Length: 598
Image (cartoon, rainbow, N blue to C red; front, side, top):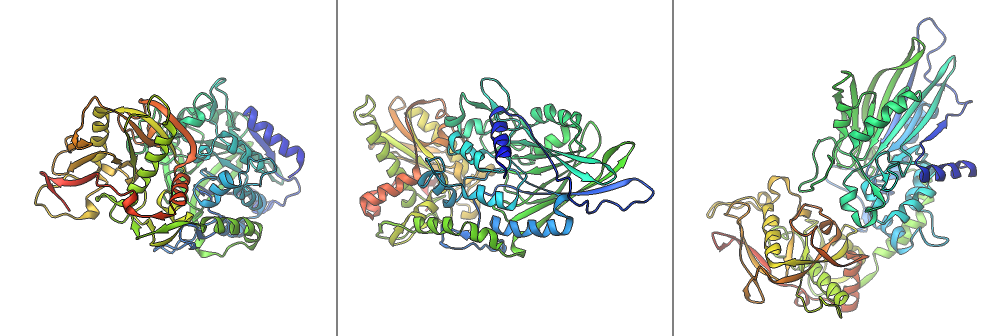
């Protein structure tokens, strides 16, 4: 990339100016209609990915093996690169755009390694593997995802500076000026002989939940208003600037709802709302929801025009194609039709260009995750952790308790009892008997959460437990029990069910939600509602994720930026041996009318 353009992109990122580029004047106009009577026509293909989450190769770092699933999917930008090359060959590169809808730099040990182990922010630090791969493939623009903020704004800005494409976020605003902190849009001209160029604008929108989920990084620095509001502001501007086609790249799903429990001031999954409410949009590349939507047609309420939406499957498993047909009539280009389809990464091989480019980075990360940090005396698994108190989750809580106790030593809160929460994130995690590696522990704690200490009362903890217990489906005493149907009541995901260590309690699932927590004790005595506790929680929960009661508003006593996953590895390394007798505890059990379920 020429130096002057790189400077332009950096400058745009700071000022919030949109990014406007012109297509190569000498590019052939493949697919333009030959000279003949009748209007000129032009065909444009917009390709899109989303929720890449650091997947460059078809590799499972947690299993140390090629990725595979029952559906036969393949993952990784190396496969996407092959698909993109195919489309460019078919349609003519000068007639294509390549976009992404966000969540790029978090999600695998590869991205963690270059954020924390060998960070891109270090002096003379490396270029992020995702920047290298996406630059090589030739992305035109990428919308910000909420997970872009997980490692802080410094890491995000460094990644941005390494990209040869803009990171778009029309609704990521500077908290002081309320102006865009990132480029809101990208615009490109496509030349057509014998007619004016086709001007295509791409508006980038991100998720308002960032304000809650990454509060520690963005509070007082950035604000994130709703997608509908900002689209309504920017789409008319883009049209007034001469855009013939408007595409939105939105890190937001189509359901019109928000995640279970998250009390957001704006709708989290608003892409379909944007299509319905904001005139002037031709297509929306959808992200965030990790769903596969080949084509969704939404009618705009004001114009009656059809807006086409598509969401390719996450982790680079699919590539969306928007095929846009235009006709030049009455002195301007008009969109005649839009259709969407998907291409599957499993149908192609890795692009050797990407494989060669990032082979060294991949090798480093494989070696890192296979480091042995200790030995386990027995196999620990999460298979039954949703409905039985499992030692593998107790391990997380024990580590969190120990870290918080050490952090508060010598403070006025040092004498208070420490309790802890943890969720059964995965149903398949396992720490095998014998050597324990970083990848074993990473598979147990798959998120980059950090630890926070909050001050809570016994009454607040009781309410917290009651809310958590809504996760179970009400099951009458004596009724048959199918463990596959026992949990996830009302759609609550596993990560929004919490164990709480340091107390003993029963969850009576024969009772209605709201009155299930029974026989809560601390230190062998009935829980005192006025008792004060230090509550060790992850930052997602501490910031209000899942809308658990009291915790977000509770007084914060301490927090840190080291990941909980790293603390678990440090604890295991110090111990040398993972023996359940050092961390397992009998804290809770399921009952029905007081009779234990298991």
